[in-house]
Image (cartoon, rainbow, N blue to C red):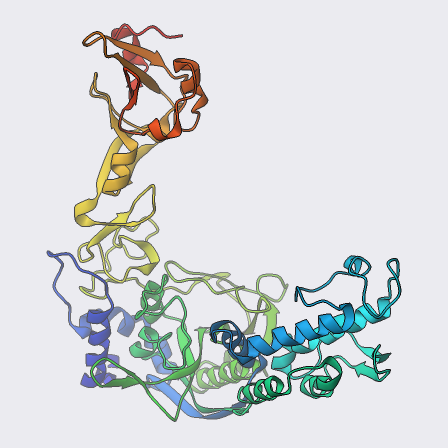
Amino acid sequence: MMLNKITNYEKEMIDFYRKSYTGELREDHNAFCSTDHFLRNWAREKCWLYRMFGNELILSRPASYATPYSKIYNELEKAYYDDDHGILYKFIRHFYDKLLFYFYGRTDSWEPLRKRDYCRYQPSIYGGEDTLCTEHFDLYEALRELVTLTALAKTTYQYKTINKVVMPKTGRTITLVKDQTKVIRVIQSLVEELELDKQMFEEFRIRLSKFFNQSKLEGELCISIHPLDYITMSENSFNWKSCMNWHENGCYRRGTVEMLNSDCVVVAYLKSIKKPFEFGDGYSWNNKMWRMLFVVNEEAIVGIKSYPYSHDQITQDVIAWLRDVICANGHPKYTNKDKAYSLPYMDDDRWKIEFETNAMYNDFSCTENGEHWALFAGNIENDLVNYSGYSECVWCGDDEYANQEDSNLFACSQEDLVCKNCSVYIGYCGDCGDRIRVNDVRTYAGGVFGSYTYCEHCYNEHVRTCPVTGTVGVDTEVGHNDMIWLAVVDDADSNYNYKWILVKDRCWNTHPTEWANLFGDQIPMEWRSPWGSINRNKRKVALSLIPKASIELLGIELF
C-alpha cells in the first residue's frame, strides 16, 4: 500500500507544511484532517506510476553534468542587478565610459550610440562634422559587446565577426570572431589602450572567475512521486523559487496540490549530496539544485519547464530513464523509441497532444525557446490532456467540486491552499481587487449587471442611497438602464427649498464641466467630494442616484 511507504517522520514534515503555510484561518474553521486522509487522492491517482516505479516512491542515481550557460547567466544577472552596484556593475560601466571617451571624447552617457548620432557627436579622432566612418562605428559597437552578460556567461564574443580592424590611436589590429574569441583576453589587452583602471579590472576578473569555478553539477538525479517532493517542488536552499513556493505565498501554489494528486505528473530533480534542505524545527528533505515536472502516461513522456535554469542533457536523460522504467514494468510502447526530440509546442505537425491545467500555472510554451522535449509512443488516443489532479483543502481535506470550473470550494483562486470553510478570506473585492476577510465583505445584489462584492471601503465609495426615495444604486452603472445622477441644491436663505437638476446621465466626477454649466463658473477641485456635499457660498450641493421612473413622481423638471 502506497501510504505505508511514507514514514511517520515524513508525515510529520507534511503536516508541518500544512499547518505552517496555509494562511490565516477563520475562527470556525473545519478540523485538521489526518495525513492519510489528506493523501487519499494521491494514493489513488498515483497507482499506475507507483507500479511503473517498481513500487517505489523515489528512484535515484548518481549524476554529474556540465554547468549550463543558462545557470551561469542567471547568476551573473543576479549579481549584476542585486549586488548593490558591486564590481560587475562598476567595471562594466567603467568599460563603457572609457570606450565612449576613446572614440568620442565624452563620458556623459553609456547608452549605445546609434549610427545617426555618429556625426552629431563629432568623434574626436575621425573626420569632420559630415564624416560617417562605418568601419570605426562597427568597431565601437563590437567592443561594447565584450562586456554583455551573454558574452561573459558564454566566455566568448557573441557579436558579428570583425577581421583585422585598426585601433585609431595605436594602429594595432583587432580581430573578433563570433563564438571563438575569448572576451576576457581581449579586455585584458585593452587595459592600456583604453586606460582602464587596472585594480578594478583585476577585481572584475577574479569576481567573474568565481562563476566558473564549479564546472560540474554533481548530485543525485531523482524521479519521484513522493508527496514531499510536490509540496517542496520550489523550496530549497539554493536561492531559487517559483510561483509554487508555499513559504513565500506563491501566487500559484495551489498548483502543487493538483500536481500531487495528478495521475500523470512526475517530479524530477538534481539533489544536492552536500547539504539537505532544512526547515522548521530540525526537519530536512531533499535539496533541489534543479527541478522539472514531466507528464508521463502510456502515450507520451513530455518535459514541461525546468527551474531555475534549462539543461537539455538532464531533461533528455530523465525522459530516457522514464522510458526504460515504463518499458521494464510491462508497457513496451516506447521500446523502439531511441531518444526524445525538442519541438515548438503546438507549432509542429509532430505534436499529438495539447496540455491544460486547472489552478496550476500551465508552463507549456513558456520555456526559453518555446520548445519542449517529448517522446510519443505509437497511436495517440487523447489529443487533450489535463494534467491537474484534485484540488483539496490542505487543512481539512475537503475536495467537493474541486475539479469543476464553477467550483466555489476555494475563495481566492490559485494562491489559496485552504477552502472557504477554513480560510479567513471569502473572495476578492470587485473594485480594488484586494482579498476580503469574512467579516469585511459587503454585497450589493440589485445592480444592472448583477450583484457586486466589495470590501467595506469600496462599498462606501461606490454604493449610494438616495436621500429622498431610499433607492440604492452603484455609481459605475450611471448611464445604464434606469439609473441617473441628480444634483440637489439647497438654498440656505429658505428652509427645505430643494431644487433638483439632472446632470445629463453622466458621472459628475468624470465630467466636471457639467458642474460648470449648472452652477456658473468652475467649482474648484478641492470643493468636490464624491459622497459628501459641496459648500459653495450659501449653497449646499449633493449628489443622488435616482431611478428615472421616480423623476416624474417627485415632480422634477428635466431639461
